[in-house]
Length: 502
Image (cartoon, rainbow, N blue to C red; front, side):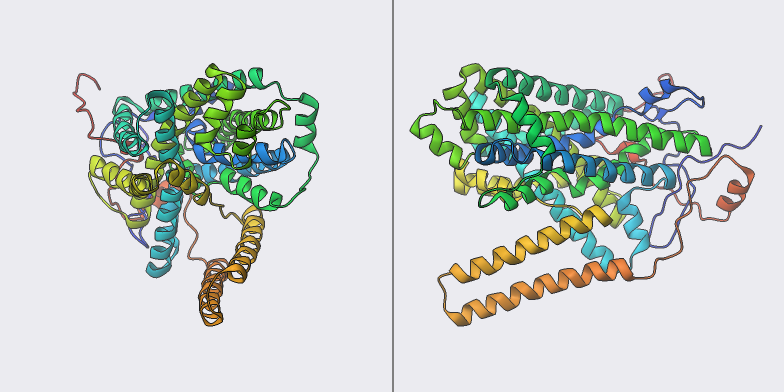
């Protein structure tokens, strides 16, 4: 009998690799893909795309979508279409990285870069995860307030607690969690499809907004950048490249190509659902805020629309059920996105630092990092302060051609906004000069860091995941054999599996 080949090749430090499997014993949680040529294999790959798609329909996206529709009706829908197409390309690259190499993005960063750049990248990644998680926590708290009149700060605490409870579902298999997230995604979709029925936007104007690029009026450029930033999420790259490792794919050229192809199809379907939801939110907001029968108070709300005001606006214009549907969709969005945000934080911490913490400790640490900023702002600033925090937390991502465009736009926007802030700041000239030097020095350091990462000489190429061939086996035998933690054990304390269960 031919020797059994390892499923994953991984690293446990900056320079070492191992072809040791992710587990040392039988894992009943891992999903094995049949070694056959059949479109039915697609169902084995379904799941990770829906966990990833949540980041594109989180409360932060809803906030930006609502403002886009309220201020510019359907004129910025083409930005959502463009960003969704870019997201599919980026997410497919992240999934392929995990499939081909057997390591997720954070592990590659630890292997590729020296200690200092690696530490800086880890800090930036953690900040991005926390920043992306802030709108999710606040949005869930808003939804609980709308449905049950729970204070926002209590809702923040409940969000953290409920997320840990839901994460415990994974000990019964990752499929259970994937089905839960998929159910929540389709719940959001159903709610906003019903909202479209209430709002009745003009279909011709919606189609025109999707396919005719235009940026009219003051602030349209800034809002367009916010839409791009909300739809290209940095933590999703770490998350997607790790989630695909929960599948045990056939280790052959055909098997790897099939996995990459089916993951792209699965991601495309999930992102299409997310795209339809974003289009629906903008269309509902555009139809409601541009209605001819708005009261003076409702018109004022549309000028600065946020998640909290949207509920009252929909209730006033479309009726009580419309407000309830929005709150249910927001609750489903916030709760599911906090789960995926927690996962992303775990993979970042494990990948960059190679920490060997117990799963429940890692979960608790990641969740506390995420909810602390939200809790502080909710306690001090209340609902209005929490709403402002959602807007501040929108962030763009980086990935070569698409990332270069986004970075260029962001740098331009940051510099122009910074200059405008200095010109209108009420401080002496000396203070303006000092602040200006600090600000532009920070931008220069940022650009220098990007230049270093781009032009530096790469380390030796990372080996592909072991193929089922004698040559690959000979190559892998020369590598060190160090154990690592299974990627699918990112969960609360595991349920003990008895020999009878196996």
